[in-house]
Length: 414
Image (cartoon, rainbow, N blue to C red; front, side, top):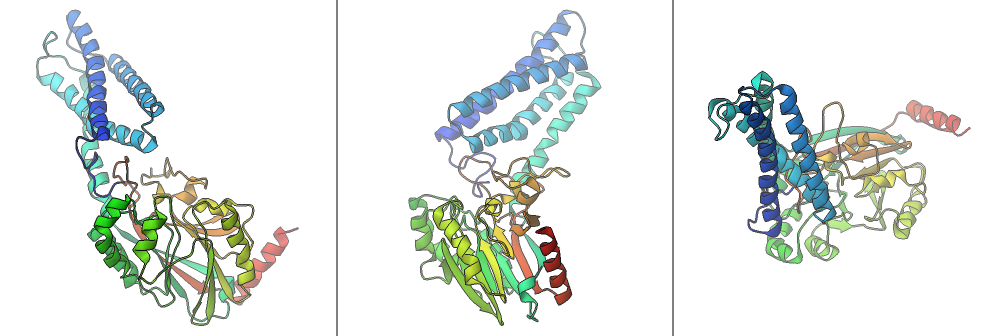
């Protein structure tokens, strides 16, 4: 999230910055007071150790107060990404500070209390809280820039007569406000794969008109690098402003295909690509999808290019589409091993939104984890979910495999 930011927003003294600072101060004060109260209680009784039960109760009470405050701030209009930012700062700054407070209480005398220990459980909790510092530093300063090249192979029935595989590079969710080395590296990695065509499922630039004017030369220089023998195709995303997007691709090899069909020939195999607008339930999106089978023939490969993977859930989606390519989810940006992303902001299952090639409603769906991060009021963070440049290879399906798939499909219809 926010590639030109740090753990908090980049421009100090903005209203949101002040909210973040005030939130951190409030949350730390709540924890400090609720930890101080049991310490004061035991000191008055002439002991110097707070039991684990008392400490756990204090921490639970503090978490409850902070949760109520967070909900109240969301009701007042801070927004989902702003709330995530507040909670992330609690994890990255407030929690380790509380851990330090527990450690210091063992070695330093507290006014009105003296030296109070929280015992071995308190020390363990404190050390675990302080471990959050290197984890959050990694999540904000390392993984968001750790670009990976993800490859996937797909056998396509329509290519049974084609001896040559087709290579597609996918550049999803560049989502930059300022062009940096990171974006150039992503483009260079895509070009290094020598793809037959390049597909961009939206969210190219996230900024205002004024931001765009400042960055236009750099944006043009970046996008002008994108060329492929069979073309470069783009649909719009959530953060794209059509005015700046059209200006950005003007004079480049990039073709904008929102609500349009594109057909290309790759060494004798014809690809039909349906460009789906951001509102994939709109009449123009549905019409574009339903025109796809009519554009194709038995030798075609049919591809749906969309920003949001939810297009795969449409009842109006025609049968026989070979591949749906989307972005939008960023893989959740945070993935928990064994569970996946807690939040994806997508209607598709978490396993699909997490990224990669999946089967959903009898369709092949590829969701890219994207190159950038969410911006605005969100923090910059990726954890177990590195950014990716996607290279998809479509290969010819053997006649036997194609016949088996046709037989399975026919049987499933009865």
